[in-house]
Amino acid sequence: MLAVLCLLPLAALSGPAAPTLKVTSPPNGAILTNHTVNITGLAGGSDFNWKQGSKTEFGTGTRTGLDYNATGAMFLDRTLIEDFDDNSFDTTKWSRSNAGGITTTEVNKGLRHNGRNTASGYWNGWSRVTSTAAVPNIVSADLTSFGGSGTGYSTMIALYQDDSNWIGIGLAVDTSAYGAGTWVVYSYASGGSLTGATLRKVTAGSHNYMVKCSGGTAYLYEDQFEAAKTTLTLSSPKVRFAGSTRALSDTIDAT
Ligand SMILES: [Ca+2]
Image 1 (cartoon, rainbow, N blue to C red):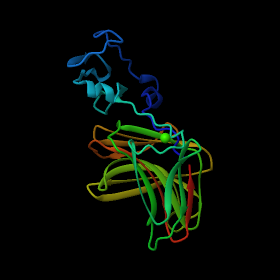
Image 2 (cartoon, rainbow, N blue to C red; image 1 turned 90 degrees about the horizontal axis):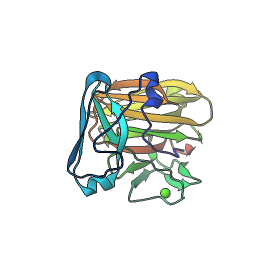
Image 3 (cartoon, rainbow, N blue to C red; image 1 turned 90 degrees about the vertical axis):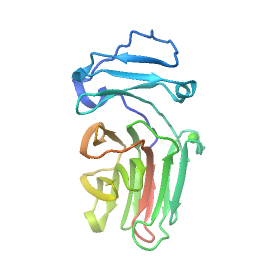
């Protein structure tokens, strides 16, 4: 599952109205520190300026993703791409936690949530991979296969601020809550208050899931189409991948 994490170009989301960006000063290719780049005359009539203040910030990555919120305010953000393609889990970029017999490993050019729930109670068998640093406010990943057995199992990609503030989208089977089938689901926590919903049933196959949080609204996408949105503000979120199982002896295998 979740082979690629990246910031997608805005044009992929919003159709023909995508704005263009042209910076004439400093010239293309120039590397400057402690200079302000001012970008004007873009969609929504807003201006944007961005200051790259240090070598350290430059080394963190170039801000290449153009984004705007519902008011038309524009901003740039960094791009992070992780392919999980070398079968070696990078603990400088990612932290792992798990419980109840479910684990996440980097295998076969992707992340794999796998295992059999050994925990009592409900949804106490899980594994989570979280970035060690904050990420852009748009994250996406391809879920290439999703399976399991028993009463319920789920996987999602999420923007995660803390346990009380996060939002994610993915797939779930929960025969007691949803009936038969695999469902696209989303859930989020805002100030500790948890909300979740099913969106539609899906058949097997690869799907891309994306989460964007911008200007006080969180947007959830499946295969580049907006699937849901809700009012939510997150501060410096990380990206999290999670796989969970519902009850004792339920299994999951998601890549
Ligand atoms: Ca790796």
